[in-house]
Image (cartoon, rainbow, N blue to C red; front, side, top):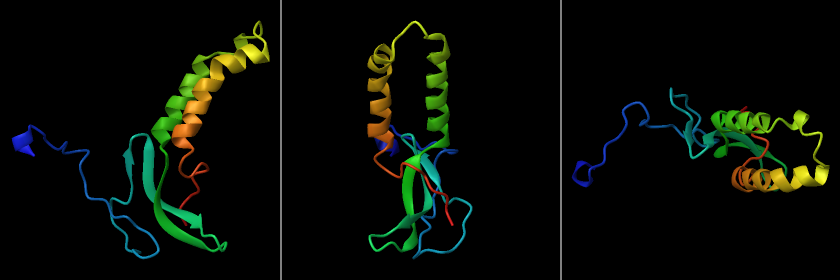
Length: 113
């Protein structure tokens, strides 16, 4: 990697154990964040309705916090002068973008176990 001028960040680089139904051990690092998603063991349901544990992504806590802060910055409670149609024109593209990006995987982010 040095030949390419790249270097690993010592605090961000780690080996992660991708725990699922096939890998049941416990290790210190069982999750990681990447591009606004947290990858970790989650309970899922197969097409027959049976639950199992798999290692999958869902929106990260950091991304949810940023989304909340953005929505608060809109001060919706102070926009009484705008019609609901005006507000939907202003905010729907942003909300639609978040749903398209983060809604692709595990919208409800169920807890492991």
